[in-house]
Figure 1 (spheres, one colour):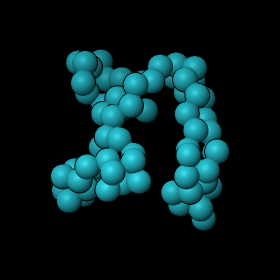
Figure 2 (cartoon, rainbow, N blue to C red):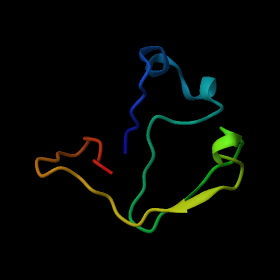
Figure 3 (cartoon, rainbow, N blue to C red):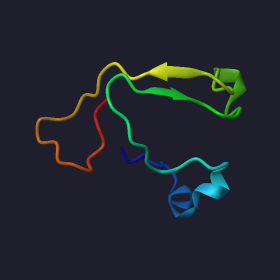
Figure 4 (tube, helix red, strand yellow):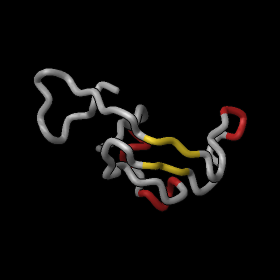
Length: 70
């Protein structure tokens, strides 16, 4: 999945300027994703916080490379 950067300036930066975060990740249903550093501690985005992807929802006219709806 390709991520969406809301800032034009962010889109131009390389991953090493974002603490190693990449603009794209490969994932599937049941993928486990964990943070490896504290990103935003007041919201719980902290080192070792993790989730499991349960579903990926795409639009009816989805084409490979499009962002999923949820």
